[in-house]
Length: 390
Image (cartoon, rainbow, N blue to C red; front, top):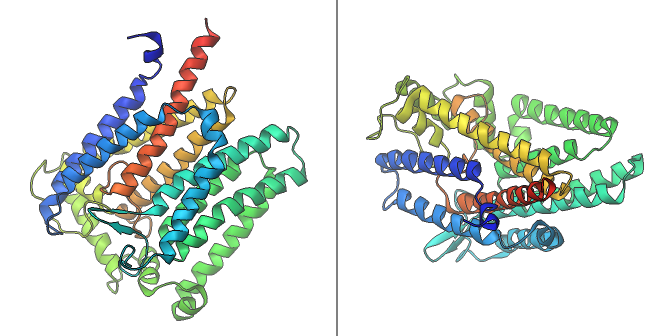
């Protein structure tokens, strides 16, 4: 292997990816035993998407960070365009599912634009912060306020389009990513503190309205009854009045029945809906027990730790690469925290998948695109270190 080829062998990222893929395929294999859908074939479809994703990661290594930085506005615009196109598309190619118009239904597969727009938004947010920091070396109230407005506008545009689908859970992911960029952008803490206080008051008022006056909340906020039920169940899991409480009960039963080492590969005994997507962690708990569940969380921890260290190390060479790492970190973190949290009952039930493990073509491919960006950051970091120590 030549020295140039060795730059592209990021062994730690490759090993983490292989372990997560193996975990995903084993969990989906077990989830198929529930036969929730006719002609599912989830295992082979997931394997195909991972293969396509791996090819995309390889192809992305032909583009360096400077090229991605310059193209960031076009990447973002394309993501927003797909979200807008979805809303005006006819039912023949974008039929609402469970009341949400979130997918393009194409021959043989579906595409969820909001998953890809996450990556395009992260790319443009990273470019915006790095450009602003390079242009304004000294922070002032004016420059910090300008950057804050930029970050909010960039994020709110796709969020509005996603809320029109409607998809409340995915919109919250975007807002969390924006929050991470605001915290890491160097904006004065007085501004951030004021913003946090305002958001806390707003969310507290919304929750109070939903808990005390749910009927009024439906009219004022536009929230659906099933979403209200999920929030009510989150605060009082023992109430038997909603489907969300049944989801909690089944997930708890599955996790508990796995005990220490799990039941292994075979038929699952506890039934819960969307086992291959939303409740894949319950499948892992029942199949591989506490040990297997802990190992999955450890894998995520190692990947997140790698993103943090990589982001810190690349900053002198490429601030853009640093913000890409932390943007991708925030996306993986909120997905893992929300998905695992709802399975454990500490977060409300949403349709947010466990990235790199849950079944889904759009989520797998978009996450792999993000992984390709991070892989390129690691490659350029290795090249830079090699030149530095020559």
